[in-house]
Image (cartoon, rainbow, N blue to C red):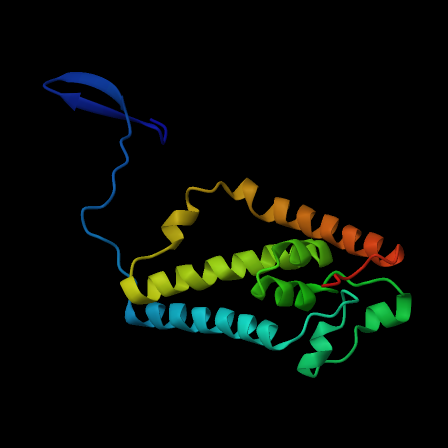
Length: 174
């Protein structure tokens, strides 16, 4: 007997039938602590978006984070090449202003993270208010379609950032 079939005996007759998966008749609920974590997650995502809204996107494609009181990118300063996270704050700043093209152009991975953060914000609010677990939705997406593609996309986005920086076409003019 393997995991996908079941051997049953009815009235002395053995039969092999496929295992049937059904939802539990008892609805799953997230406990109070889990709902509090969901609200904190939503608040954290909202905080990132508010910070991005306060910061004016840099026309050079990097350095927007300096408006938030952070230091310049040491990797960029020492090597002349943008680090993997260069342009993320600028990308978020364009994203919250609704300019998805600029957000994607300046740093494609920043745009992707902003989209994922927006989805996380709404999912966390859903869990917090309804108490229904949102992780069940993730079961519909096979694992092979999550981590490796994101890593490959992040690597390609860094390559894009280096390319536009070296060719002097980094940034977005209004």
